[in-house]
Length: 282
Length: 282
Image (cartoon, rainbow over all chains, first blue to last red; front, side, top):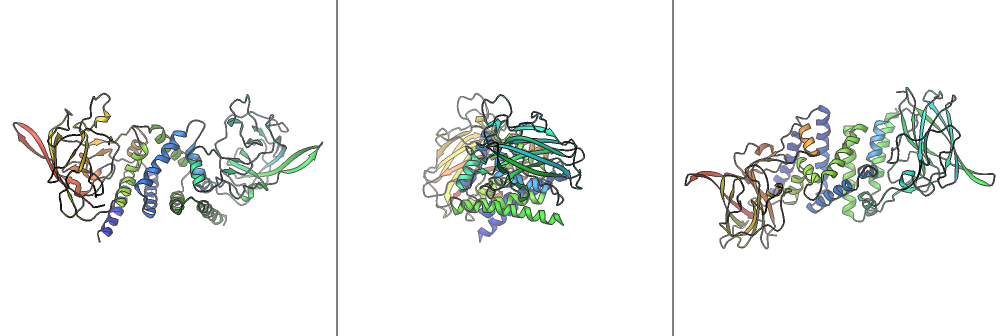
């Protein structure tokens, strides 16, 4: 009998917490916190979280905070592996059918990358199979976009980004270039390989405890900016990669998978990627 | 038309994230993360969190992590002001009608407090109105509990706990004693006063932005441990305190409010509190 009354007390608590946000600075803030409290309390009520589990949750968040610094963002990583990042990106980047889809930005972008000319080698000696990338940047109306800025960054054949090495003298597998009059850009680099996200923190603990892969399928990052169009942040994933169905951060979209076609050139294996990037007018 | 497909894609994402926890170490872990993902995605979908808001959330959690150390626990504070702590405590401490209710533990408990005899002064010179506290510890069956350990900690008239002062040579307003043969304990101290929770971190930012009080109504903390009974962690709140209806951490239960009765004794004002603590057999 008293149990029923106590459950009522829990509901009253939730109401009181929701009411406490009625004086929020903005309607938007009130709406967000009202929803947050309802869902947070709903989660706790539904699972009947124990005091020990609550303490483990506090400890988990504390460790995530303490491992986070200028170079490591564990909360972004947690958002990624819980599918939150992709959900936010998906909701905020709904596009017409022809447009290239967006995916996660990831933690390895560095502002102010070196400028290259079309045809240059962005790999700069990074280990890996030589690769030629040819892109076309166009509008949803089908017109090529001239002078669009294309930022590129990628891992090498060891699954490492340049910034993960301690002592590189210059960026590697990273740079920006501009599209020519026909909307095309092209560069040489190395073929990217699959790699694990950092697993030495709470995100890694979570993946291990849930028997999940830490791997991301091989991909090249692109950020394409053209005047009058929405900036596109995306990847192109390598077709056939064994981790396409189990990307640790749920970033794969079928439309972003393309073949890195391998052939022999002067006795050397070379991979070639062709991809069209379609931007939406802003 | 394509919008509908995209919403479907969001739902598919949520399904994929839920499915990723199917290999969890335990059924309990799978259940907890399944619920967490559903509620977290539900919150984001319902509020249509923007990329800017998402970034603000990441920054908020990062700041909470960085201000947290051995003495400051911002994630507990956030749990407190979102009513999460009280919800967890309420769900895990459902009690028979007569039993004394639990409330938040708070961040100011220190293990290994000094031992006192009944009648001693726990105030140890802390500033405040002299106060006499008399307690009775009994079982839900109505029997006095002999030799129960009673831990006490409280703020002074400036709303400060001893651990918040930089250079105190000994604990003040903090100690433990044991119940006598009739289940009674009593001690001298000073009357506690209302105080604000720490507001120099993200929790304070949240309270300010939502127009909420940071104040907690005046109270004394009790932790009562008796063999064969569930340990009781609670407060006794001062009747008439102006913040009883707006406790920043939602910790007030009507049954825990009692008068600190003031009277003149030898020309000095003295407050007196009497309270019965009823424990549940374990």
